[in-house]
Length: 207
Image 1 (cartoon, rainbow, N blue to C red):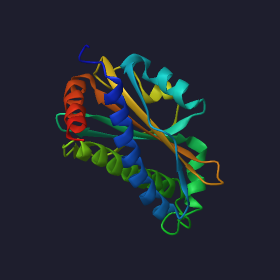
Image 2 (tube, one colour; image 1 turned 180 degrees about the vertical axis):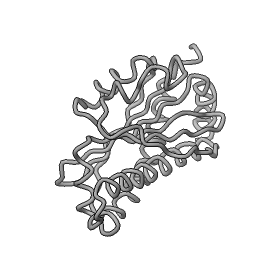
Image 3 (tube, helix red, strand yellow; image 1 turned 45 degrees about the vertical axis):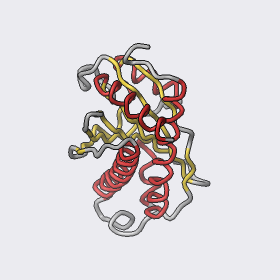
Image 4 (spheres, rainbow, N blue to C red; image 1 turned 90 degrees about the vertical axis):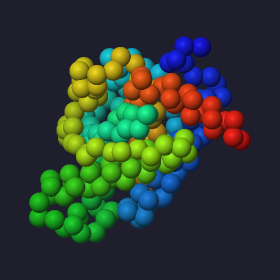
């Protein structure tokens, strides 16, 4: 097995801890939006960074432009967390929450603030929970808005991530009875894959 491979047990373990992490994040998001959140099964794939946009398009079926927020995290396992949603869907969220979003006179600003709040909640809760289960405490960089009307190819522009290979983990959140979906994507750097393997092995041996 090369250092960029995962055994079936390791992959199953990562999907399970990701599922637990996403469930905790979904509870927080449900409280923010006062709406029931439905979760997909976490999907894990090893990708060439140059092929990340194509891989995510295949996994999610996203063809529309998107809004995207990114936030870096690091321990001995480091990477980027991205929250991606369809560009025209943020206004739907504003209708679900109170001030300062719904009645702000600065509509574009309030929508951007809500996007940041959702992204912070999802990224922080999910990444922290996943790495905590692996015995790590991540340090986060400040979140940044990648854009509000981007294609997936623009989200994953060559050179933005200085890695050759990455571990891609994706899960999506939908609101019950509403046409809204947000995708949380974790990309973990190739040099983090070996520490991830070791952490998963330690977790499996403790069970």
